[in-house]
Length: 275
Image 1 (cartoon, rainbow, N blue to C red):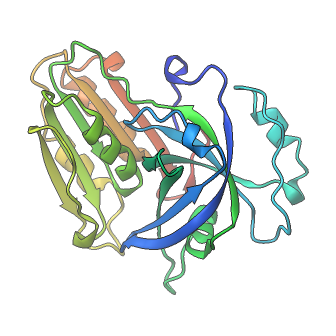
Image 2: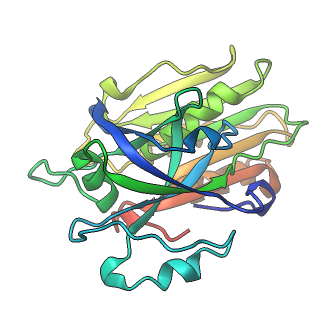
């Protein structure tokens, strides 16, 4: 995931947590609710607040984490012997309830031809049980809308949905613009708490087995023309949606400094793009 140092915490804090429950939230999303002794102190900023998620791999008999030193956590993480090193992935806060110290994490579930979940994080989420250990390293936000933005446009496929949900709810109530959200099935559509001036377009893929995630959202985004050069765009998800979406918006008149994009996975590779 792209990083904006200005929006990252100076000393990212690691929160150790445990699973409360894991349920299928929608046909394509497994929601894991976690808690921890100090999780009520998580400095939630709204918008697309994200974190590094650490979970044990299936072949490990214990959960081991390094001592992390602020932003220089990667060397300590790599210093853990590979045989006992936990899996690390990037996720967005789906919901946070500080009064109860609970945080929801939504995992998109892509399945193989036998209907089994693919990807370490999704497999872990679908099999998570109450009490299972995990850890989260706070990373702040990447949504970076200028104060003078004339409009906001947001585009994503299902892996960016938690960010879109948070952004919609966090936007100023007088904001205007457009949200384009692609999902695999009609049952994945939900009501967004978006300002009345922000139009929300849901796109349901016609063929979830063969259609590439993000292509429909990209096609819709490419029909959008910014009103002026003072807008702000946020395009995330599958790599082609992010990169070609940014290219279109820039050619249509938005300065590159007013476009935040993050292609954090590639459909062809079916794996996360290193952050």
